[in-house]
Image (tube, rainbow, N blue to C red):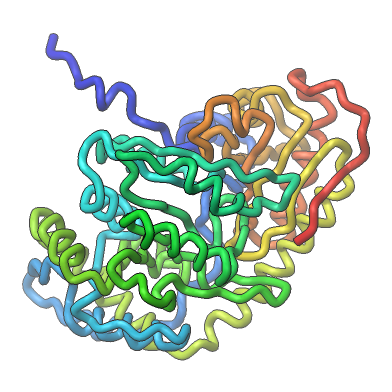
Length: 407
């Protein structure tokens, strides 16, 4: 019998999808599974006139770099954030995921190292494996509000194989928003050590409590170092259209990333048409969406604050929270919720925290909660979590009151 590759055998499993078979089994038993495991909000997409999808007899291949009209529209959209970039410096990708993978493959050879503040978007683990790279994590603590350590700690992590620094801003899973000063510190390190600074800005529209978003494309004197990845998936709740973008004023890196794009022929043509229509809308769509996310966030904060031995930091952006629970094994806990627990015919699906770290044994008592459902469903999910923490067999023996850190 042929043997599969070691690469395939060892590939990272997505923490937000690995327990979907268990969720399907629970549903087959009649259990109502409330999905807070993945960033798929329940909002409607903007009203888009689909009559402009002018494909008749067939859907053709498009340009490998993305359709010119969409690239121009994305650049125009970026001006709302005081970002000036030419369409020639922006490529359309098959979702932000492909953009991250292309960026990693373009900046480092096999065995290269990428510094990533943890916790980080879990799939960075898998993308790095696919590219043959090693993640060097820099730990940020939930008890310190997930603040990035001082730049000297980053500098100590830089070695001869280090090629880039990678982070998401706002952060998934913590909801941390990194300030202009933080980005400037990282940019100065990138410039001094001739590294790339790759910033995933997919959640830039979702900010709370007066926090401001500062794009890495606005940093000065680092045009050759900065690569930004973006997406319409979260911005317009079109996760399934799989359209993202990668932007850099470094013409050499853009040309080499375009070579990867030509090998996969073109991004999805239907998705690009929808993305073009969405990016051409005004900003009225996002104001009520962000307001509703803020309301859901407040409900979650209120409910979590009432649970003993639970530690969290109020998210500053995006729509995720990483929460520390009085449990010994988040992998077992998330599976147990689907296999052995229900409350009033319901259970909640969460993502185990271990997947959001590269350091072993980190996240073993943490889960990510995506507050992407309406407040009634979210409240039911918190009812389930509260009851689960009363009967779960793998609880830690703690007696401290509920705790939180505030931004």
